[in-house]
Length: 416
Image 1 (cartoon, rainbow, N blue to C red):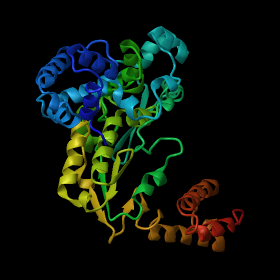
Image 2 (tube, helix red, strand yellow; image 1 turned 45 degrees about the horizontal axis):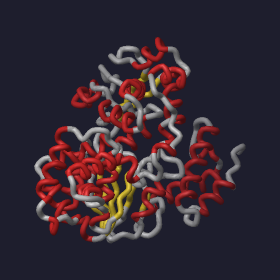
Image 3 (cartoon, rainbow, N blue to C red; image 1 turned 30 degrees about the vertical axis):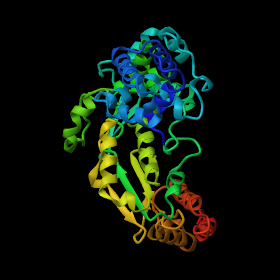
Image 4 (spheres, helix red, strand yellow; image 1 turned 180 degrees about the vertical axis):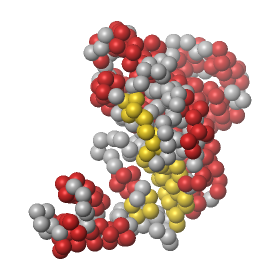
């Protein structure tokens, strides 16, 4: 994978080595109107450094000098994020081909959402006091589900805007024609599988990052701010059942991405775009594969990913991108063990764990032989839908191994 420093070096070497030429080519490549003070000084310094050394004007020396520059790490981050190059350089189509809605002003946004300015102001809930979300804990996760009017606006943003922007190829969650199965397939039959986890994935995505994402999609600052307010929230008090999560309260009191809003999965994928790009590059540098399913990071390859240095690089990139790794959920799975990822075993072909498939087969067998009432005493319709979903999932994962389960399910007499 070519580094950004090498790409910039190619741009500089594509014409005469003059100060004016370097400035123009830099502006053109970054799609900027002005270089700014720091970037302007960088261009000036490199023009002077290589002006009298034409024998050094090659990609490698210039790229190495850029990466050794004391301000390069910060400059690289700003150049990729602010210019939008990250979205345009790697995604399948330029923004002009995404058919995004043209929202040049907040008034246009109101018309597009079919709300008046007063309602739009109310939906933004800048201080987190309007009660637009219903909150409850599901296990250790805080679910924040928007109420009807805000949910309608968020679905409009999702379907009319966010669904048109492609996420990184490594992202498989919350995307059409992607699934758990597509996320694990690249890791089948590998010598080692490394599974890591991002702690507090949704609430760790701050409003500032969401705002920057909408701006990179071409929306003016005021429109991006309103879109951010509509898709993020502030949680002043945790609901009952969250006493043991008091340590997370400061995180939720800041404006964050709510887990439970229809827009949050797509926004999260876009906000994690650079994380996916960097981790894909890291994996590719050692001949490994990388995919992400929501907050689960999956790598597979040879012995290189089993070395501690690779894991430390993953953690460093995760931290650098503003996320927090969860060391307690990091697992290295050699081929000699059961390589279970996202609930599927990937040693040979993707399949359900043997014990889970056996339990499902036993339930379906007893339903077919003794009647559904032998396995469930509640609503028969609910139980049938639940069991049908589990059977369909087993068939989707591995139709051959699920053949007997499917046949037994078809033999159940639900009126018995």
